[in-house]
Image (tube, rainbow, N blue to C red):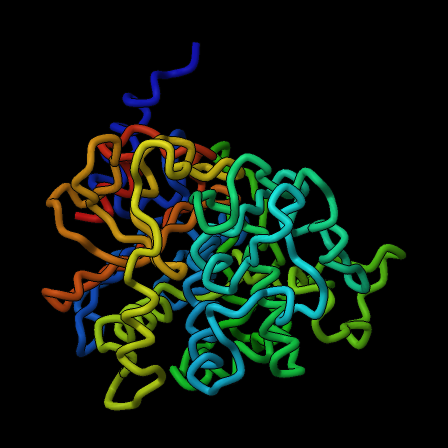
Length: 404
């Protein structure tokens, strides 16, 4: 008989607190990393476990890890830079930005805007897929699949957390600039912040890639980035003939290629730098990346839960517990919503922190800032179940222990 989820969660916490030198154990995370910071920089670091069990390499806060959906918030920083530069308009019809008609077939007269895509109110779903588009393929083919659409709710009227929104956002960014998405994000966000990170490995240095955190499932089996100290042979989904020639990339045809929805490889310290940007209203170390108004636009909820107004969980991922999403802006989640049915407070203190969560391939992660107090925290755990189990909130018990 399988152990009860709550008892498993208690064992995970016990291991986390009492066995700091044990990297991997039965029924617990393979690795955990927690970085606390304020407006002036990092204030505390706590790490346990292994980045790579096979080699015995211990995890550190400098090791790049695939942070799943936290990637969406970082992608949106790039969007806002393009908005400030006058290259994008949040409220423009996405059809114009894409160069082809984007419409829910059940609501053909309702325009879908970039703002709707960023806030998961586009009426798209993940039922037709979102990451499988190969090199040389066209993302538009997925959107043409009727399964890609929620035909019961008009665009702008309903929150439905959908990964497919962000490949479309990346495609829009490429068309606006003529640049490949990963290169664009390096220019707009990562390099200006001094962060050694990349979307899908292509632009990371060999030294950075050698420190990759291997992602393990709940059984301790490697499921992502088990690259043996090297970059993967192909950093994207190969072409239909199995080839991987990135010169085949064409602007504005396949925004899914570099995984804007979840493919950012970044260290916990790098994520803390993103958190400092949110605390600093778009500025870090006296250098301004975004206007305060752009940060405010991101963190202001475009949607807040009310019965019948949207789904409070992700259908395609591990956030299956109702009440996980209750307030959402432009790729920014607000925690601790004081509404019945909301369970979005892993800290347990009722404070309205902003940031984003991540969950995929056995990883659970979060970046959260308390803008009023000027503090924040980044965490991730590997070797986790697909579902977030054992917590008092809709987050897992392990994440709640890292929150505190």
